[in-house]
Structure formats: structure tokens, C-alpha cells
Image (cartoon, rainbow, N blue to C red):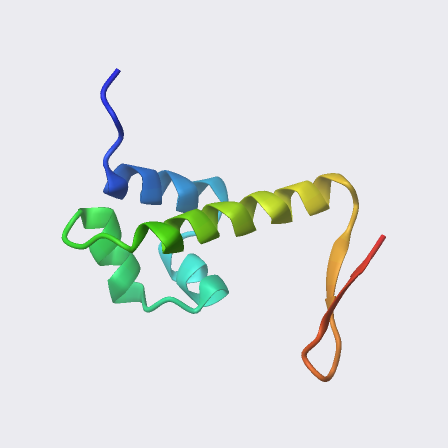
Length: 82
């Protein structure tokens, strides 16, 4: 089987969130043009950035499955509640 290109992996990761490109960029505070360039294959993100996005998205999915919601306090600290 052929290894997926970075652009395909990036697009699949974004699509797995159910977000369109604009929403994804806003969620992760990444410039729209940057994500567009990644998905078109004109640029690649550093591998650690991609791994972090994968990890973060997976952890959010697991938290939802377990019924844990992320709470952000007024001072910006995040707490978890079930």
C-alpha cells in the first residue's frame, strides 16, 4: 500500500474533526493560508506540529466519549468536569 502524503493526512485529520478549513483554523489558531498550503501540498508542517494536532484531536474525542467536558475558567485555566 502506498504511504499517504502529508497533504492527504492533513486533510483527513481536519475532516475527522467535522470542521471546515475556516473553522479548523479558528479552533487551532492557525492562519487559513497555512492550512490551505499544507492541504494543497505546497508546504509541510513540521512533523511535531502534525503529531500534536493528531494527539490533541484524539484526546478531545476520548474526553467526549467518557463524558468529560473541558471547562475554561475566567483566568484562562482549564479544568475537567464529568
